[in-house]
Length: 270
Ligand SMILES: [Fe+2]
Ligand SMILES: [Fe+2]
Image (tube, rainbow, N blue to C red; front, side, top):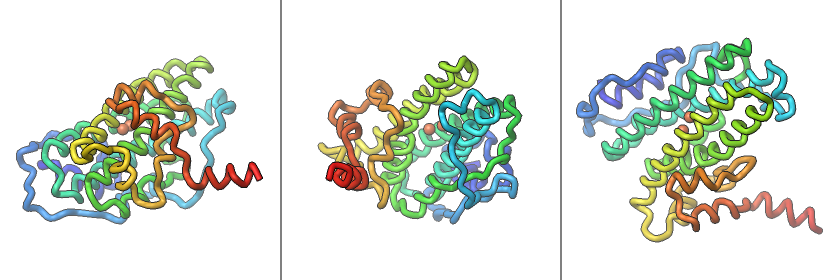
């Protein structure tokens, strides 16, 4: 089986268990002559289907309640599954992606599958099954706006995964504070892997960016996405340093204020 066929199966398979199967195929079977394959949305069995129903992420002070903890992990697991599906779509859609990048992305998919399983098994400890709460397609909605593999890495690795450095670190600390070492340890694993994923995205963009990676990165982001989405509740500088970011890039992200925030701030001042 080629990476293309494997990824296609992730997109058309209904069951989560099928989307989590390991890749046992052969990279050399990847044929560039094959056309691209694109879906509007990945297939999901009714139980895990995307829902329009909006539910709120549990407040930090509610995480002492077991059910709320399960709900938080349910959100995290959905993000992992979306990452798997979006990466699979990228392999199927952007056929000019060099084989070394395909290979690297397939390694990332395997780690996202590991993260999903860790979150799923922990939420089961809290009495929650995947599919118990409505699942949103928020991250997926950007796929239709992404036209190149460089743009894909700008959106997924340098924006959503970069922000996840902050979120993973924040929630690791939070779970440790409430004495839930087991959940905190899972977030620590995710954090360590996420550094690698962000580093991979950075190296893809760096190769083509010339001198000014910040400019290149922001120009690759489809509207209305901005670098405001590349950071979370707290700013984890260390993770970005470990991902290989130069100081200037870290500062650009840290200091970035979206137009929305600036407008809000002006009106607040007046
Ligand atoms: Fe992940
Ligand atoms: Fe990741």
